[in-house]
Length: 246
Length: 246
DNA sequence: AGCTCATGTGAACGACCTTTACATGAGCCG
DNA sequence: CGGCTCATGTAAAGGTCGTTCACATGAGCT
Image (tube, rainbow over all chains, first blue to last red; front, side, top):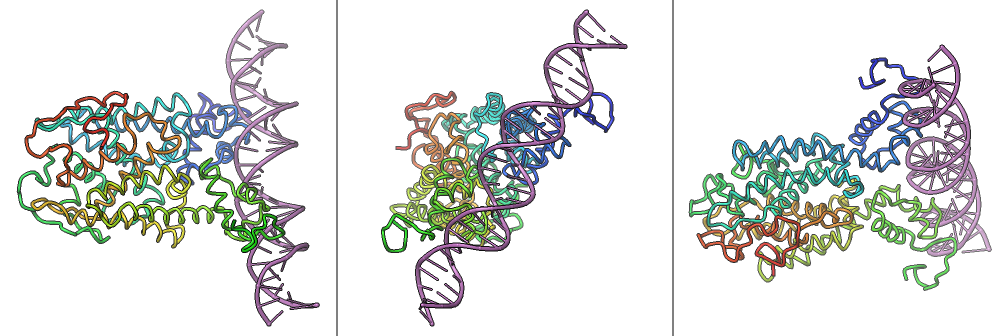
């Protein structure tokens, strides 16, 4: 119901009334289906019920539509990461973990946005607004990293928050991009992408000196339940210390 | 000099003599320039000096050419990773680090291959040969991870090598894809992608219990030189404990 | 010499991107 | 209410692609 500013009339005359928005939505659907590469400007126009030339009244060209979507994607991305972070409640580590999961969840649930943002070939600096939106999203991760860095146990050196943030981002993007979407997800894994990323981040944090519970690893506490080569094959093990987090 | 099987003659008559190879080379160049998305079948044909229909004698369609390049890319990738690993010499950790660097080097030095392999939209399972090549490359990382896992210090649980390999891969791909190539490289960083990845892997390995030198982090050894918030800004610091490895 | 089959050509189709000249009608001004 | 104007849409056309098909060429074998 976003036609014709007011009336809910489905008919439309010469003027569409809300073409720009309709095109964005149509494109989003098409990208979700066929990827940013397979998406065509003409299809979006057809789907909105207008001629192939109409979109040019709202976007300079196909790339501008794409980067508009990428920008919108970064905005929603920021919102979701921000909600997941929830200002570090109830505790910093828990909230940090939640951000990682939110990252993957976004990649999985919003494939069209993720595609436009990271895989469409649209350069981040194509547009000042796009770049700004991208930076705002990254700043959520960075802010979280800053809070976490401030918590490094006494005796351990404090890592630069910026570096931590970049590390977390690369892990998340790496997992999402290799294992968590579309065709890439066809690679067979011994564990889910979520579990994979969670374990990765936890090990990383422990490497920074954070006392991550599961697995003492500090003192000589002998290997608990034991998960030696469990995951070496490609069968999915039931749980195990490196397996299911909960 | 790969024309006309024998004669070095540059003229060519009706038959090209080595069109398949010429098309692969042309495509490689075009992808390096304009990305897999921007590369066109017709351009490759033109560059090889044949009509637009000729390529169809050697490739079912554009996608098959692309996946051929991806496959070839995985083969070269495997070779480079394998050389970098060098069967774990002189010591496992050093060799492992070298593999990470080789990963980034490949992404940087062979953008066309990397693009075709990971960013062209070609699904890994498009082709049995492609999938096999991809697995062989990954197996280098996995083999290295296995050797490393076997080295976990006594008292620490041994992580599943498969998981380690996937973690390392995701870090490498994440860094390469976000910071180490083309337009993505335009994101400004406080350190080079190589340094970023090296630090990431080292911290990760320490999290697994490996006694990584730089930075004791185990006992109460007080914070050495100190690098507190050095990298918080975006200026490039000269070195610092998290900075230059050497 | 002649045959055959892999390899290359030209022309043609439909789809796409983009531009240009023209049509429509919503909103405003008098 | 009447008419102007300008944002918004249309039709048509040019250029490029991917792909197919009938046909041409000539390399290698018999």
